[in-house]
Length: 414
Figure 1: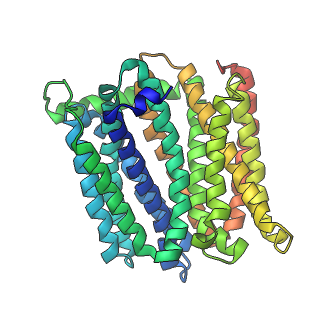
Figure 2: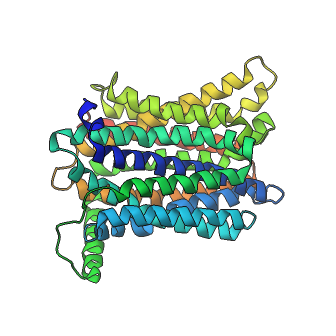
Figure 3: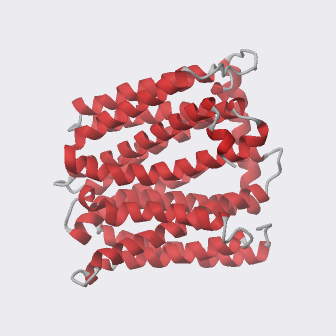
């Protein structure tokens, strides 16, 4: 299925550019989570500091993602791909200078994330111009696989790189990766959109009008709002775990997250990949509402279980137990997110699907901000393990409520 694609040099260039840029982003994310926690570790606000970092990554997608997609349709996408990677490569080197300044770290992260909002739609829009229509599904499949895979590899490599060569080495690797992605894009063919040039103020007006129209349509339609709620929970759960991960590593293993990432982060990331694969293979014909209910139930139990793990310290294979819980938690996230996305596709029309998914991304990030920030605040006020227990209970209660709603609505789910 992929043999023709892999013989297409133009596809290979943009695919490898995606791999290197995604790896760079995930390496950077994980390294900065560790760095920010270390900088704030001796204060009462260590977990809040990590929350603010996650928000600095996420807020630009709320402000700029939809607008960036509209602008890219009126610009030369090849230039967008080249420029965004070069700018990100330069910005990342700023961490070498300001690695001990929290405010500057947040500002640089925000700037890097802003440029990432332009790279992603330019890359997605370029793909149909580089492959045949009959190969588009396979091309998107490879892109989705490497999106998940880069998360696993990036988060897996960050800890060992920091442990072996220090935190600055990650910034050099990230910057070089962005440069490689830019060089690969230089030799791509013309990717200029065929749209006539239009005043960007008019584009802005149309975009905001579309956002409002789709927002009203979504909140009035339970068959759309419920899958979006589940995608938001999956996104928020990732954010909460990312915020608490450095503190959990110390509480559970009495070691830094960089030293024990293979026991917590790597299994969770692998679990997400496994969950996504299960939905697309073994559970392909299974009701997606049923898979969501199962995933929510498992996530609730695993979060509560993880909060009690320190009591098991001293048992044989303690590390394996923690890794197993993290793996299953990742699987539950994959079950929920992939099934919810499939539900959205099944319960929306072809004419509205693109607009709905564009608005979805913005709504999902807005909704996920609150639990991510509250997790950091609550962890500093009470304890990270208490936050895990509270999160598990709340997700479990939501699962019970949702189970009843799903049964009442009987959504198209297979």
